Structure formats: C-alpha cells, structure tokens
Length: 222
Ligand SMILES: *[C@@H]1O[C@H](CO)[C@@H](O)[C@H](O)[C@H]1NC(C)=O
Ligand SMILES: *[C@@H]1O[C@H](CO)[C@@H](O)[C@H](O)[C@H]1NC(C)=O
Ligand SMILES: *[C@@H]1O[C@H](CO)[C@@H](O)[C@H](O)[C@H]1NC(C)=O
Image 1 (cartoon, helix red, strand yellow):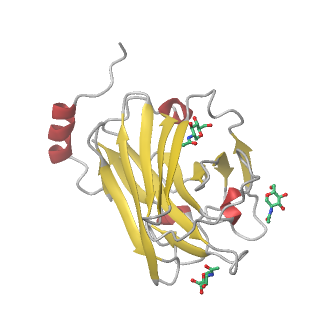
Image 2 (cartoon, helix red, strand yellow):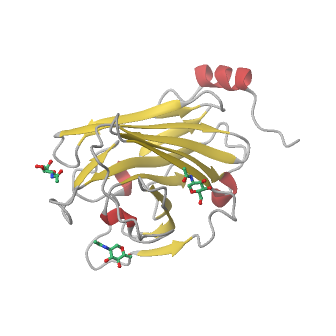
Image 3 (cartoon, helix red, strand yellow):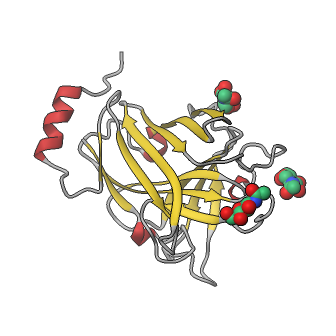
C-alpha cells in the first residue's frame, strides 16, 4: 500500500509550523475550510460558500458547498471543459509553490456536475490587457484520476460537490510540509441577470478579475 499520511504526525506538524498560512490543510479525513460570504470586488454580501480541503499521499480532496443557491443556473447542454464559468460554478485556482504564479491550475464545477479543468498561462500575473493569456486543458480528467460528485438539494437551496484532484498533476504527491497558493471563487447568475454575474471569493483581488495571482492565499499542508 502506498504511504499516505499520518494524522498524529500531521497534527504535531500543524502546531510546529505553518501558522503564517491563511489555511492549514490536514491529512484526510480531517479537513480545513476556506469560507467566504463576500462579493469581489465590492465586499457586498454573497451567499455562504465553503471549500473544505484535505490530502492523501496522491490526491487533493475538496468539498465545495454553496448555500443560498435558489434554483442554481447552469446550461444543461454543456460538457467537460465547456464554458461553464459563464453560468454558476464554484472554482479553485491552485499552484504548488509560494510565489505569485504565472501558471496555475483552474478547476471549476457546475451544479450539473460538469467540470472545467485547465492550466492557465498568465505571465502578467493579472490577465493584463494586451498580455498573453492562454489555457491548456486536461482533456480526460476522469481517466487521469479526477473524481467529482455533485448533489443539488432543491429544498435546502444548496449544492455540494465532492472532488478529488490527483497531486501528480502538480508534481505534488505527499504534500505534507509544503506551501501552495490558492484562491476559491463562486459565480452567481440567473435567467434575468445572465450574462451578468455576481462574483464571490475567498481572497479579494480588488477587481472583478479572478486572475490576479498576488491575491491568492497561502495554503500549507500540515
Ligand atoms: C448552452 O451551451 C451550449 C454549448 O456550449 C451553447 O451552444 C448554447 O448556446 C448555450 N445555451 C444558452 C441558453 O446559453
Ligand atoms: C458526476 O460526474 C462524474 C464524472 O462523470 C461521475 O463519476 C459521477 O457519478 C457524477 N455524479 C453525479 C451525482 O452525477
Ligand atoms: C436574479 O437575481 C437578481 C439579483 O439578485 C434578482 O433581482 C432577480 O429577481 C433574480 N431573478 C430570478 C429569475 O431569480
């Protein structure tokens, strides 16, 4: 059996280091949660969103939970790597390393259990007008070891996605002790608003632009 991680040691490491991180992510089944309730960039209220994370030796596990979702708005004809970001999604931007990245992974999931999986090339670190900005898709995420399961609860007006992303994607297996950069977002729209969206997020970039990498939070695996 592959060595995964050892909870007791992980707890000791959490006490010893990583106190400067915005989020300290433990070995599964314990989790750490990034929660947010504000819009980008205004700071106006957003319905509560939570992203709970943990790791094994080979995977990053994320549980995305959207509250106050009303009747989630998505396009049922879309499939993997389509422009689901134009509708309602929850998102994680992920980079292994401590720098403000110029290349990172963008993961999105829709209330319809459809995902978007792309490496972003953003050399200006802010999607500057006129600067290069590109995507390289992960074409077969489910063959590659990704997993997702999305449950809509119409009565509670919530939707929840349980996600697993292979750490090999980042050359990042056995991440204990490493510090990464991440941000988490949620887009909100409906039939009346579309194509306008309300943007909500964990670390506010100060502009209606998710691709400002200096705003990404620091995430330490403990
Ligand atoms: C839904 O997505 C499909 C495929 O991307 C697109 O052709 C269609 O125009 C979209 N429908 C609406 C109502 O936006
Ligand atoms: C979500 O999609 C994944 C990948 O296709 C599939 O394995 C899973 O069963 C789906 N879950 C639901 C609840 O539809
Ligand atoms: C869409 O959202 C706007 C802004 O929150 C709201 O005023 C409107 O009633 C909503 N429309 C629908 C169809 O839910």
